[in-house]
Image 1 (tube, rainbow, N blue to C red):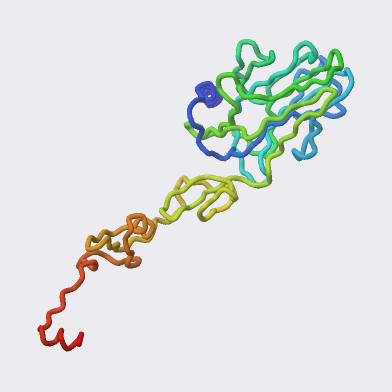
Image 2: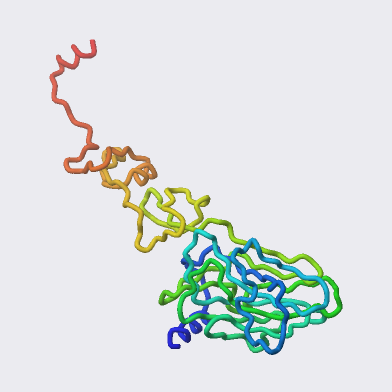
Amino acid sequence: MKKVLLAAAALACIGGTALAGPNANGSLIVALADGVVYTVDIDNYCGATGLQSCADATVSTTGAETVVMGILAAFPSVASPRLSGVTFGWTYDANDVVLVANGPCGDFELATAGWPNSGEGTAVTWGAAQTGTLVDVYWAAAYNYYGNPQTLDLVAHPSQGAMFADDDVPSNLDPIAALGSFGFDTDGFLPCPPDAAPGACCFTDGTCEVVLREDCQGVFQGDGTNCDPNPCPPPAMGACCVEEACSVVSEDMCAQNGGMWLGEGTDCDPNPCVVPVIESTWGTLKNNYR
């Protein structure tokens, strides 16, 4: 329980720039629990969608019947998520869409005062990290009162954003890459994540950044790799001549300073940049250039 409360506190304090973590590039989707009939005798519909793949989700319905929907975190199939918390909100037209019931699929929920009204938000946390590529986060039951085309749209939490948190202390916070919607008598939106995960990208100066493979401008270390500890080798160092001045730097740094790099492992003692003075006689010089 203590860990759950700590996770909830961390999510409640989300702010600033998010750090790349194992939940990067994940989406939050809304899926129909197809064939499930809502009844007040059941107070928890977590897992009712039975989804095994994001691509199999149904994100719309027709008619006036109350339907059960699941809200799931979806991650790339090659990812290794460690989901410990999530923040999100939703919007819908309350004149048409009637929300009958709802509930979290985690161990703890911290919602805004007006939740589950449109424009409000909630935070859900787990005591143990969820490691599947499809994770039940929330459920809701609703129907379309007038039959007009309407959607229930997942959006950012009004103050905490749309974020995934892992089980590190402090948590790595990853922005939810895409948010889905559910359509009542209209199309919904299903943003399944691509089958790729961010990984460590090594640059020639030895620095590291977690990005998608296609965004890596250096050497990609593989899906799901990270920069802690830094897997990138330090740059090769060697003597750099800028006129007669010598310094031991990387080849890239030498080029940036307009110098001539003398190769890996070279040094400045003795100074290789000083032009040697060759002693000779005036007669020898005249003979060489006659």
